[in-house]
Image (cartoon, rainbow, N blue to C red; front, side, top):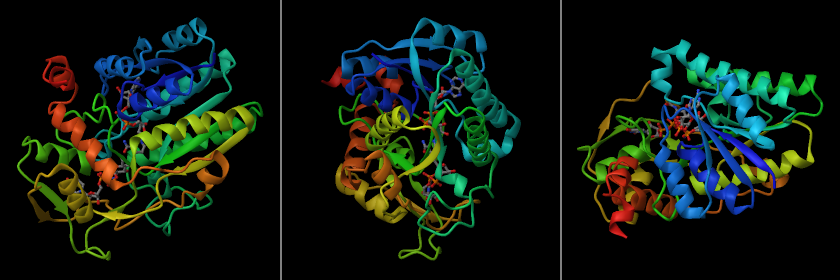
Length: 350
Ligand code: NAD
Ligand code: UD1
């Protein structure tokens, strides 16, 4: 059976991807330093799938640990989620972001090279299209002109991987450019568990809904969009996770590096998200209009036709499922994995 090394597998997208990989019959091992992930997420994955996940606790920059993980398991592919992702924080702590996201990727790539592992899926982001690209974003557009160190780390690693593929014709790399992942596994057992005050829209709304935050600030209502608030391409994390299984299948059949947008192709405004969440949860979300957030773009969404054409992947779940699943996870686990640990989570209720 093929074994996939999942770096950053104890995080939000990684844990959902583990479920889909296991469901597809793959064996998985995880490396994670738990800087933003939780060991409990791996226990929950075991509950959902009935499979134990072998866990290596540590750094992707720890070459000895990587070598051990690659040697002890016959790894045929790597999925690399292990990055820092807070845009604002990346402007405050750029060195840490380059160290973690760029150096981490280099160490991982070098260890793969030495171990003869030739397939890699990299978590990239729509942010690589920068601030001037026309919408919808299509993979053939120029990338770069990123507006913060986080975005630049993603762009730099994409360039490194393209160079690595040029130098090693046996290597195959999928650069998955995620749009805005939201939602949670329908079991309510795993979901997004941000540390501290959430930066992203859905986790913030979900915390307002359970009473952890008083109200949502809507960052700007004077954008050139239908209702004046920003529009994004939100996609369900389970659809996104399935995209990784499709990408691994593509890697097994192809050589070279290719970028794929993973989004729905639809744009939804902040106010539409609030209404959809209220409908799914039955909870009113108090909000006020606040000033624009620096660096936000008015509207962007994916042209996701390449992924459909070449990977056979298409997002299937709509806004209603994204909101209902976010609400199920948050309402059953108001303090995320801490609720699960303290027995106040889903397991206690079930
Ligand atoms: P996450 O923080 O929940 O998951 C990342 C995981 O990697 C965490 O468990 C963290 O502990 C681990 N990690 C980070 N640095 C590490 C290191 N040096 N060594 C070992 N483990 C490390 O984030 P996520 O939302 O699941 O995102 C996964 C990837 O997708 C990230 O690379 C992120 O930049 C990218 N991405 C996320 C989004 C999004 O909206 N969530 C959008 C575009 C791209
Ligand atoms: C952000 C990052 C992006 C990253 C993505 C996924 C910025 C500028 N961009 O995208 O690089 O790839 O997360 O991690 O941070 N909003 C509110 N109130 C809130 C939070 C958000 O109104 O409290 C609005 C924002 O203005 C935006 C929308 O909701 O219009 C979505 O925001 P968010 O979830 O942070 O994602 P992005 O900004 O699209």
